[in-house]
Length: 203
Length: 322
Image (cartoon, rainbow over all chains, first blue to last red; front, side, top):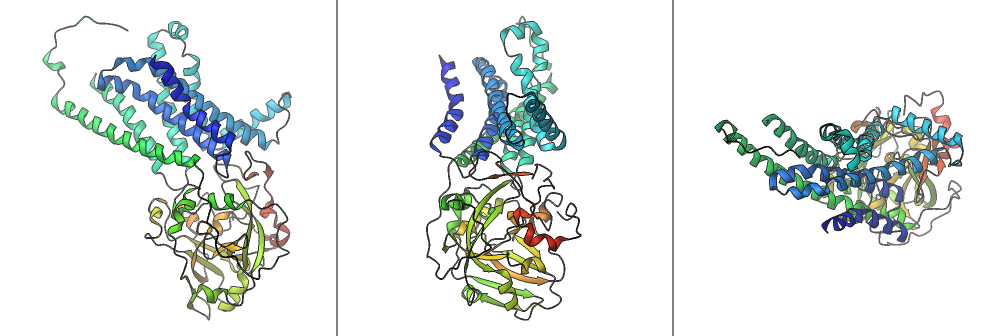
């Protein structure tokens, strides 16, 4: 019963953004607004997902685990929209919006994205954050957990640590001078990962 | 999940006291982090909120049209006054529109210093005396990859410089923005070294396209756009066009401008708009003419003012002198 409520809550930012686009309630640079909002929500959901286990340990509320998959998938959802915006509004637009149906377009687009990822560390690290989430999303079903086995599945899903760190670095490299905000996310991710490290050292 | 049968707890397994205290420290740190995150959330959500369009001020009189204006359609008043990079009033684009009302533009003085004969502190009225105001509708290209068309009102910087009578030693002009934490409390978090400083080579400063702007859309310039007097150099990235000028200094050596000091590998002294020289973090080949949703036009060399300004850079390696 709680799950649908949380699900709708997680959709909230997307709904708010869609509303803002429809009624034109964005700044003079709407692209920047939607890019930033989806990126920041991906990072927030990564943090929220990473907070589930510490929350269980600290409060003893084991029921929290029920929401972890959904929260993680929302991080992937916002991250994917973020990536898609970059692909369409930056890369595809840079090619002058050729016909999407043509093979040549797919090749040019892939080359253009690849070159950008190769050339710019800022893009590289952002893409890494998304790439680390991709296998986690693909193996999020009960069937995949069974097929992989709990231990291996758990090992694989530690990739979320890399994704969160890469996400923070991506944000840090975006800002030009005022680093307070990315630093705050860095602190949150640091504490959440530090919690795991502390437990690891204890056992 | 594996459920192990309960075993007797050995004394070695009881959490030692330092670790126990560590946990408290952890919880405290977590609480602080959560607080910081909440603050961050509240801050960023302000981004999707639109800014406050500037209130309208006095209409400027006797403004002439200029052949140097572009015939492209200017951006709206609301767009130009709610989307600003003015870090002294916050690093978010909408913050200057919300915070710049604390800027005191009257009275205003401009200090003229350095290698010139007319060193003095001038009242703004004296700076403006005898200057013919013109509409200068210019393209404005930000180093971040967006652009606007802005109907400034201003006059050629050269007319002001001539009055200052620079000496032969004056090779560059250095400009300084007001820095006053009482009026600009957000500057504390700007992350830049204040006061904001910019500079031009003498020939660039004397170029007829280079203006001191005092108005927008025929009205007195809004605070968030750099009131009461600012520079606009249309063939250079926007950060060269320094706002709210309090000092003009004629110098022999090339000034070390604020952004160059901040990140020398990303921002140089010249900062001419150049589609072939990328910013290390993004391409400069195309741009987003706001309010477009995507990069909807190719960036032009010298922001399309090449015919007028390219000769000043003949023989220079623009890849090196970015």
